[in-house]
Length: 146
Image (cartoon, rainbow, N blue to C red; front, side):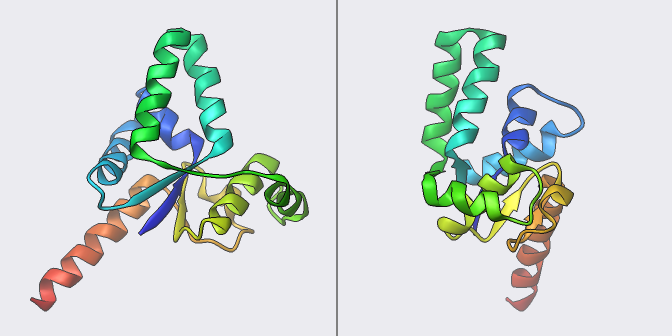
């Protein structure tokens, strides 16, 4: 499964934002173990750097970004993506940009802390908890067939 991970999910892990950090960390571990293919929007990288730099300094922020590059693919954001986002039914422009970037790289779903923000999009959207439950159900369904 290919997923686009919203900025807030990555920040939940990096900043240990309870109660969201544990399910988000479990989800990212599934990306790390290659059970999921994870994408970040290019704008997510710049946002995370900006926030991390203020919190931990420039050098550590760059280290954190390098870690993300090892885990995730990057969904490009270019003029056609931005133009599609402007025309999108999704009211928040940043969310619309991520949705369009996800469509462009053909992800199966978006993972965000705020699924309602993407309700007018065309991609399936899950919270970390929802996707983990779905994956558990799929695993148990497969196991029951064996």
